[in-house]
Image (cartoon, rainbow, N blue to C red; front, side, top):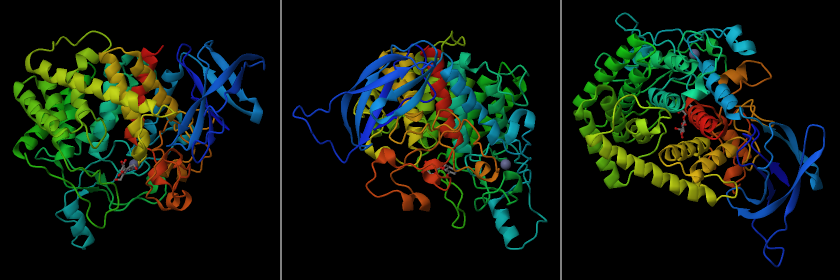
Length: 575
Ligand code: 9MR
Ligand code: ZN
């Protein structure tokens, strides 16, 4: 038998369960009733006194996990403190933590992780502690066509070099990719807009104390870099990486030539959207930046207008860094149109948003996604912002055409949330994934679904939504078939070996805390996972805490960001 709980802990008043699991090929009805008998779990306080004894009722067989599952409800345990749960029959135990600050603490460590992704700056001991490191990637970049000239030995005489310093490393690699950046920034900036109370903490970063909330200081570090990805004509480069990934060395030792790859309409539209959003978010903190962001957004929008055709991106053959492949730019254009409408308040943007939305709706394309590939849900957040914000409004009323599209979004979020609740009920682990969705970055899908549930809850405060969102977080933090907390440094049994060049190369035993793993992937593409995961392994168990497993165990800026959104919501709403 194995025993699982949310290893970060629980808020005093929330629903709490202990899950017992036993692997089985299938459900074999040993008993006439077709049911397995209940099991017993006990809870002890710090003095070793048994304060609770509960029955864990058999729930059924979970096919995705390959487990028989029992659940014990321990919700009545609500006094803050540390406890120990035990399944005496097999002497297994785990720690239970109850505190009002669980999600505030989680949100903080997830936010600080971005500081550890900073590129182009030294991480000083006073902010980074033992994870201090030298400055990296200060070299200038060249455009792809010039890189080819250089490698062909043509000299550097007439070549233009670009300052591209700054931003966050995307993931376990040192590349920086605008479409990935835009999604991460949107999750975080909207989390701040909707739940500002969750972000009053000091993150101990160089900008702390400058009068701007630290989470916005951190985003500004990325936004200022992102501005550098825009070319003269307004378009935005699809990515900034070397031709091949760096070796597993500290970033300061990576001296490969960085290349500005050609622009794409996805990157340009995401850029327009996120800069228009930033112009609103920073208006009260940094007027000059806010103005710059809006101008940049307008220039990107003009390029999009004069380039209505899809401008895709494909890696040159010799390149092995990420491509963030995308075959449809309408969701990005939709998001850009919505944000431009909010920032500039001109109906032409709304007309464009309505036109694209109608097209997607007609085709039955998902309109509420909030990942790097499909960003259309961000347009929904943008248009529904007044209804979604916790306090007050920014003075603008939902009227006219905007109200119509907002209504459609409202309905779309709610119907998707209902589908997610139903999906999660099919799982004995309560996770809202179907069998095929255990793929690269499956934890992102789980967290993105939690964001949709939370969005629906803000629109219609139905307890099913908030409970289901919390269940998704329980899954991420330990209630899953491998028993890991998928956040480094959080919980008794958190994963420790992310596919992250810094963690592998830094020679420090401890793992940098606050990073979310990609998670189980039943279709791994890295060699190590292919060797080690037996065909037929239940998808929820297709996970290994091994650094070479990049298709299971990498970290990225857009896997942390939905976790920030979800935990800041839970902190503010679930108390
Ligand atoms: O997160 C991305 C995943 O959804 C894709 O399946 C995968 C292959 O295209 O790429 C992932 O993104 C990686 C990116 O290309 C480069 N930086 C690391 C990212 C996380 O693994
Ligand atoms: Zn760097």
